[in-house]
Amino acid sequence: MRVSLLPEGSASLCEKSEKVSYKEALEIVKKLRWIIAHAPWGNPVGMAAPQIGINKRVFVALNKAYINPTLVRFNLGGTSIMSEGCYSIPHQAFSVKRHDQVRVTYTNEAGDRVVETLHGWEARVVQHEYDHIEGILIDSPRP
Ligand SMILES: [Zn+2]
Image (cartoon, rainbow, N blue to C red; front, side, top):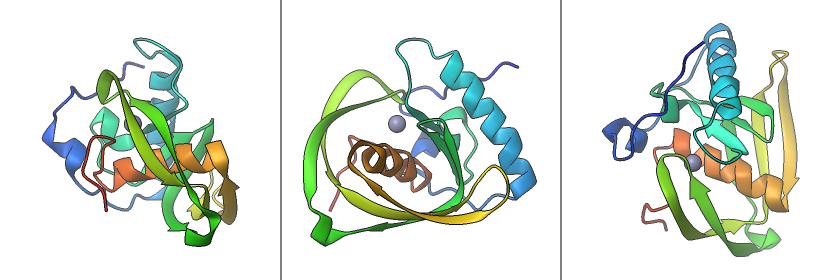
């Protein structure tokens, strides 16, 4: 397998991704796991399909695949600001404010629809990858 990251500044990184079939998603997950294992530097904690040029709603975060996810951010859970990097904006760090608690509904690799409440670091990584399928990068202006 040979998978490449889209270069920084590619227009499709800022486009909203489309829903994906379960079968196609499994193929994309294989590619995402490949690029995570063969990243040009560092150790990625996640990767989203748009980053490899596929504008479909699927990503891998902390070794877990999220297919057609929806995300709810809990305002009462609080927010925090942390420095983040991104393989689509190489070798730069940005301070990003994120919710500390989110609920994500998604199809997993086994094909089950699951609902999970995530906290802290896991919530942050999932929000970062979820932003990718919404066409939002860590240097994008945010509300
Ligand atoms: Zn990223």
